[in-house]
Image 1 (cartoon, rainbow, N blue to C red):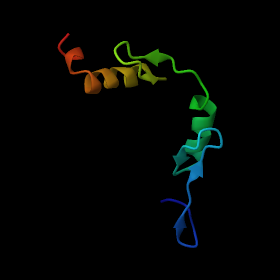
Image 2: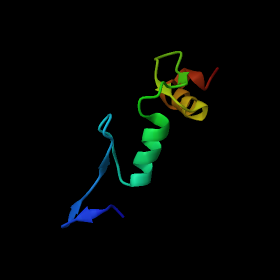
Image 3: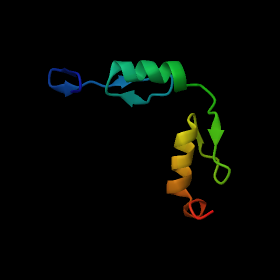
Image 4: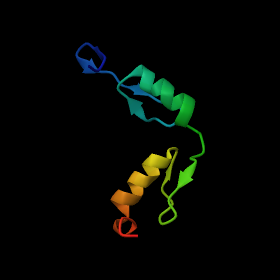
Length: 70
């Protein structure tokens, strides 16, 4: 459940990039591991970047149809 104040939903915005999170712990994880960090993996077709190898594989499968046939 989202935190609320006087019936309005409160989000937890990142002070660095502005991305919003439903939970404070999600914001803390974002700040510790992702925000401002260089991505480790990049797509060789379009340059999409991610921090996880499995996320890059998922990107290949969803964004580049010819990848699955190779």
